[in-house]
Length: 270
Image (cartoon, rainbow, N blue to C red; front, side, top):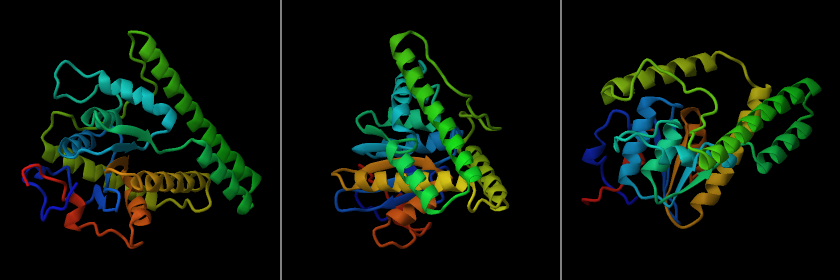
């Protein structure tokens, strides 16, 4: 992902904007953060278009490591039409499919590092028993979901069936809609969710404990990956994008959303 003075002409796509992308340069390689809305057609299209033009060593996914085998199975299970994204797994399986030579790595909780950090923080903060119970209950639910994904991956590999745990998120927007409509719908959805979350006080809540610790673990894992030779593309929820970019920025300063380098992805014609 070498430097380019402007967005390549092939990236004249309304789904690929600075709102959803951050690029961080490093001595071992570059890190490109792509923000997504789970299962949204615009996010799936953005992931596919970007990974068509880059050749990362690693694709880091906001998935528990234990769930990655299931999404690899989804990535292999494409529709007969080769250009169509995988039927299941949304933007995560689309990323694996679009970068077949890259190593897919899960960077999300639950994992041992997350559990150690979470328990340590609850103890250090002297969290109330009620808060601790809510946090651990939430983590227990996430762990069960991750284990379900692992079991589903085993069954998918061992049988002719494709096991799909959970439900796919549906939007008033389709994969075959024009990119302009997809992009407009996604921006409206993100704005609505952010406005709703902004009106809710979460400081000190079980949700804040869990999500803050998740982000710290993702930051730590991405820092490890970007220290290794080769470029990394990370697919993360758009609500995590700014905080991850800020924490991972080499200068410690906020990465400007309008910085052209964010989208200056290598053009093979250059």
